[in-house]
Length: 476
Image 1 (cartoon, helix red, strand yellow):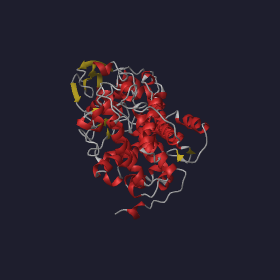
Image 2: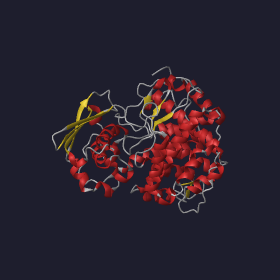
Image 3: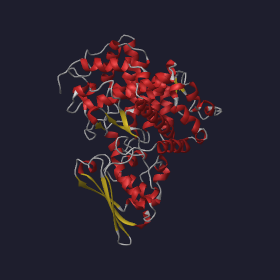
Image 4: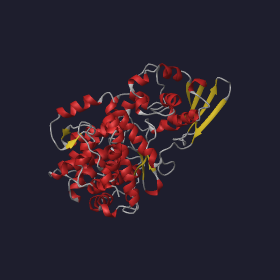
């Protein structure tokens, strides 16, 4: 690790706390708006996960409050609890923005937005922040997180889950700005967050729904860290680059100097809007399957057998396990190349509605699973590459290779209309009442900068509330 110095954290916090909305580039705001729209949509879809009712009930038992709203409901909770639930909602179908990009064009596996969006929505309500203030906090919190992700390094197969480590610091930094902490207090908030940072991928290997909790814990602990620091609690002098600090504990070949490269010149965050509900590592293979059946000349029933070619490292990771016919666990399917490939062959895509217990019990899926094999034949350097070889009942053999799956804004970006369509479909899947007001919701989210606060947005996101779409009067 490079020479430890507190100057890295000083520079990051000064940038985080003092940069104003008007100093943010237009392109940065556009990307933040896109991540916000996408995160809210997948958060609403999360209500169809079979564990959410119990999770909300547990959060309500922690204590009542009226600071912030659970997305898609009229339920009010303390900001820490609302952020916890909303982060879990966003994570439920592994459909949220991913992949941190940062200085030097580097990219690292991450899921930043699921935490930062939840924190910003909760604290904007609690503090009465304007839309501009909320967007600035989101842009700068994402930038902080992406820089830490790149500087710290991360190996998705290390066993760590950085949705609980990196995201805890992202939440603490974002909350520090929204709660008005000074730089010294924010430094302590980061230190307190480091003391709460944790997470591993064991639940993913076991197909357990607790996989979504590290992201939710990070949202809650980040807010509480900022609250504690504001109340006078202190942490280590240098919780980032010092002895036993974040980079030493959680970094992999950490390069702290990358965190401040082009600081204030370039702004970073998650760079991929997922077109499919699944682990990003599974998306090259399922996209290849979707492309195979896309033009209608091949149907899934025409396939005698199909081999998915992956890197050996991917095959031996959590997405390489076979999905057993009769298993109706959403999580096991989300993180399975085997399952998502079969779903893509049948439906031409993979969305939350294909991952419910009833959808996974489809006999057609069980039959398709029996015709798919996985092979670790690609080099380990091709982490996001997959190739399929399909032998048809006619004897014909088809090959499809995906070098880079769709969704990465720097390589294979989705069109704006595709992002909006994803948002609309998530509303239709989860809340038909909200789907009827999707145009108004899209406008509110994409023009949040003009809102005096988040009151109207949160009311519009409550399906039980009466709603009159007056957004067209505000259109330029």
